[in-house]
Amino acid sequence: MAIVTNLDVMMAKRKVSLKELADRIGISNTNLSLLKTGKVQGVRYKTLDAICRELDCQPGDILEYRPGEEEEEAGGD
Image (cartoon, rainbow, N blue to C red; front, side):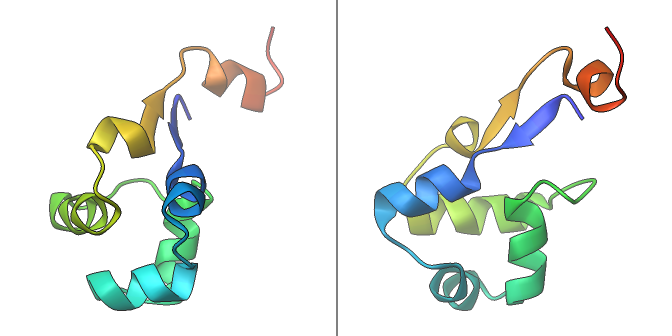
């Protein structure tokens, strides 16, 4: 997918564990882990808002658009 997540980078910068952030924003460790690894098709604005509030960041610090990512994942040129 052309949208990639940098949630792990922001969590490391803020020295926050997956469990700690999941507890703070009220979602399961599993769902946050899936979001962190980019294995979700979407994220609710409410969840994104909570993450940004807890990590003191902007959505663009967490989500990044990388044109051409879809072709690379599919093995294209």
